[in-house]
Image 1 (cartoon, rainbow, N blue to C red):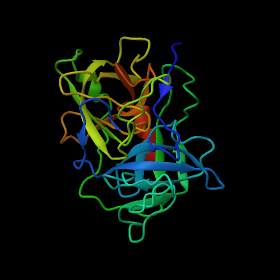
Image 2 (cartoon, one colour; image 1 turned 135 degrees about the vertical axis):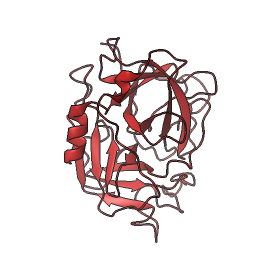
Image 3 (tube, rainbow, N blue to C red; image 1 turned 60 degrees about the vertical axis):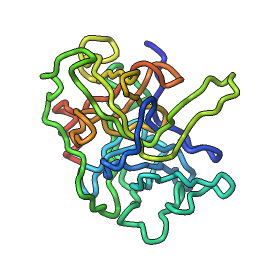
Image 4 (cartoon, helix red, strand yellow; image 1 turned 180 degrees about the vertical axis):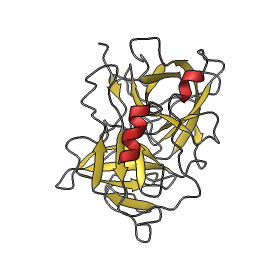
Length: 277
């Protein structure tokens, strides 16, 4: 099996971990949140992205709902960590990554002690990695709109190829990664960003086989996903779409270039599991 790079990101004190390529700030999908996961002692495990599909249910990646994580906090501000201060280790406007700022709990921020993993186990069972997760919020968050679950098999009606099917991705991950031997630095805006991508395949390769959605984020005003975008929505259609057909899952290289993959949630068994949480 090829070396896989998951899109979940550890939280570093000097840099929080967006969307790569030609991205824009995302004020269109307010239900997409920045999710920080914690161990029992309050230590940060990692951070990911996720989508509210109701006031209390957030869909993310199974890789994010790590076995070590027992709780989570979700920030829904577009610039959830944009003012992160490495000296204090906190964003003074939002409280990221350790608390909800005063007046934001239950409006722009929520906690969770109910985490659910569909069965993800470090990409075991390839290519059916079971990379789906659900976070149930302790405080309901009212949004003008929520992400929508698809009908089962909605992707099956799509034609193949990069020119006729467009997707929108949204998340809080890195916007550029660099080789460890270069003097350049990774780029992170700590904001919710979005970009468009085109379809490559979802059935006919060893990396997809009906379970994963392969997309192309290079060129033509397009972008892809990177570390920290894991669990963020892959929306079928343009920027105004709210139809989640996959969650950002993995890529095949460390520099966040080329194609990337989402774990399909338009399969009946995955939808049944999400709806049962």
